[in-house]
Length: 146
Ligand SMILES: Nc1ncnc2c1ncn2[C@@H]1O[C@H](COP(=O)(O)OP(=O)(O)OP(=O)(O)O)[C@@H](O)[C@H]1O
Ligand SMILES: [Mg+2]
Image 1 (tube, rainbow, N blue to C red):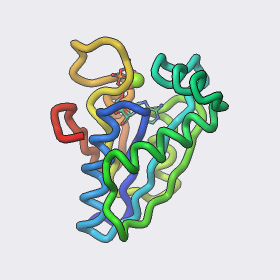
Image 2 (cartoon, rainbow, N blue to C red):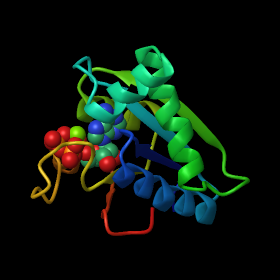
Image 3 (tube, rainbow, N blue to C red):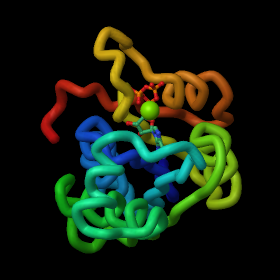
């Protein structure tokens, strides 16, 4: 049913949980897993700024790192073809554009991300993707196993 699964990664545990779900689905359907992190051209959020500072990483290295970390943390199954991409611009717009470019037939996002408003059920990126996506969207809840 699914040939290409796009998962969006922002460095949060929620996103790692999204990668876990997406990896399992890709394995089940023998689909390609496209992992996308978007550099939003804003000051880096606190955990990413800390990472950049402590390891002396450039911004692009930070986004490469969060993709690599999520892939390991989420234990993407062996045998799944993975493509890691970094995008630039508005995160939701980039996720939607990448879905079109890569021909994704499923988009997976976390319900929340690195934002600080713990009372939100859905972050602004996941909400915008849900509203505008042309393909099914799976929203991984934070409570799942990370
Ligand atoms: N910069 C990004 N690059 C890739 N994916 C992202 C990015 N930001 C968010 N996402 C995706 O969207 C999901 C929800 O994050 P979102 O940013 O909507 O919530 P939040 O950070 O809690 O709230 P907000 O950013 O609105 O304050 C993340 O788990 C991730 O899948
Ligand atoms: Mg966010």
